[in-house]
Image (cartoon, rainbow, N blue to C red; front, side):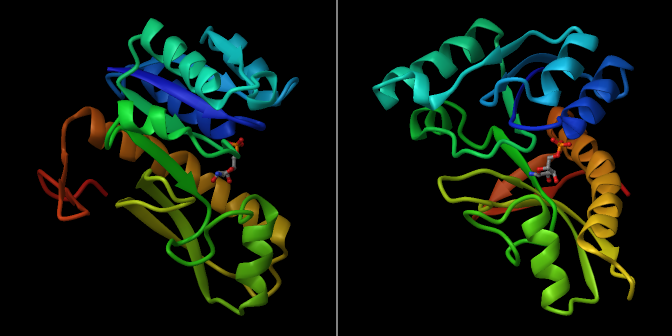
Length: 209
Ligand code: GRF
């Protein structure tokens, strides 16, 4: 199965999943990466892993339809079957979502539906979690619909908050869990072990953890 990644930043999640594919543990190919931020760290990682990468920015297109068409052109050229959002700080155009129904995953550094939505990304998430006095936070992988950080949940894993945590220390521990859980979710998808019934994901074939 060919995977298409979208990222905006450092790309550590991209690298973690791509490496598990390249090692043969996940039977999928990291086929391409699209990034919307010039010079983002993810480009260097893509080059190192020999994954074709593209800079595609909404602001370079006057018409949103042309932007969506360019994304679809790249996705189709690489025969992508599953899209992975890995720190992509934009919504995918509806035309792309329609072309990949239930075939777009996202990772979020909190336990959705709490601490998600527009503008809730990066350190803002961890600051909000600490400000709320939460005892636990975690990571969510979900199928993507047209709302930010919304759609059927595939996997979640919790991370305990320690009393001296700062947004930085918490982000680092959460990121480690992200690197495990995203690949786990992709593996389930690739092995055809996810079924969606009435808006909820069921994992087939017993526990994976
Ligand atoms: C991660 O925290 C991810 O959950 C969020 O954006 C961050 C991306 O980190 N959506 P990286 O670019 O994968 O290192």
